[in-house]
Length: 94
Image (cartoon, rainbow, N blue to C red; front, side):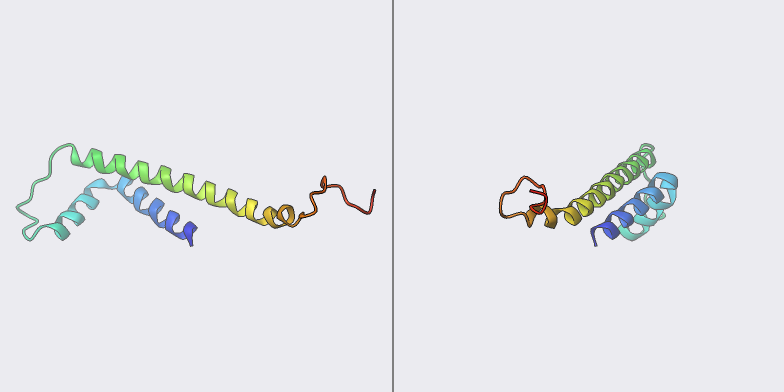
C-alpha cells in the first residue's frame, strides 16, 4: 500500500516538474471563482517545478526504503525465530 502512495506522489511530482503551467492553471481554476481574473506571480511556475522535483525525490527515497524494509521483513522472522540464543550455526553440525 505504501508503494502505491509513493508512486502516486512521484507521478504528481513528475507532472509538476515537467508542465508547471498546466498545474498552476488547473489549481487556479479549482481555487478561484473567476480564474480568468487571477494573475499568478512570475516565480510561481519555478516554485511549482521545484516542488515537483522535491516530490519526485521523496517518492524515490520512499520507494527505496520500502523495498529495503520488505527485504528486512523477509529475513527478519528467521533471525527472530532463533530464541535459544545460539550462535547461528546449525546444531546438527556441533
